[in-house]
Length: 163
Image 1 (spheres, helix red, strand yellow):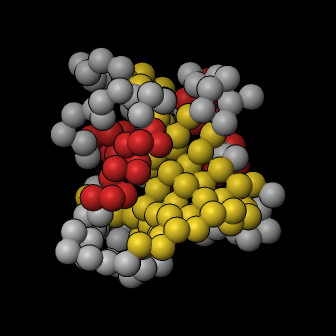
Image 2 (cartoon, rainbow, N blue to C red; image 1 turned 45 degrees about the horizontal axis):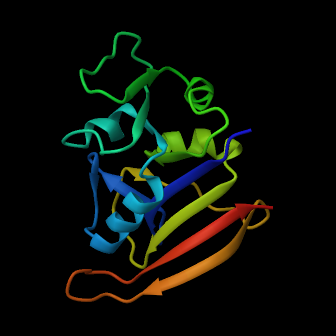
Image 3 (cartoon, rainbow, N blue to C red; image 1 turned 60 degrees about the horizontal axis):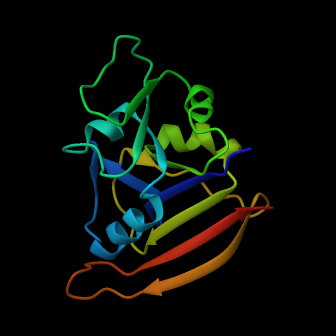
């Protein structure tokens, strides 16, 4: 069985983004995301994939879309049409779910861990991270980062494992 990790940055109200854009710029969170996901397969929805100027380096992108005719010319990209098909592409290895909101909802039941950056602010958004149920998930690590000259908001890194 593979290890399925949801990795996200979400506001206090679980906001992820609006109009396919992030709502904040946190350089340390980008560095952490890169460190954690580099060398792994990452699963995302089509809209999340299309929000990148180009695929993220040193990662295999597994893109979920309902569009049977969807294609990309980029290397290291696999197009699939269901969460189950995406997970089959990452059998026996750690895979990271990177969004968006609908993909997180569909993947939560398969996930064993959540790496969440909780941005200590609320935002208007059209994509949201699922509510974390304390009966399902146990917080095992927490690291607080106050705002500074590079980070407009306070945030915390939270690691959850399935109970």
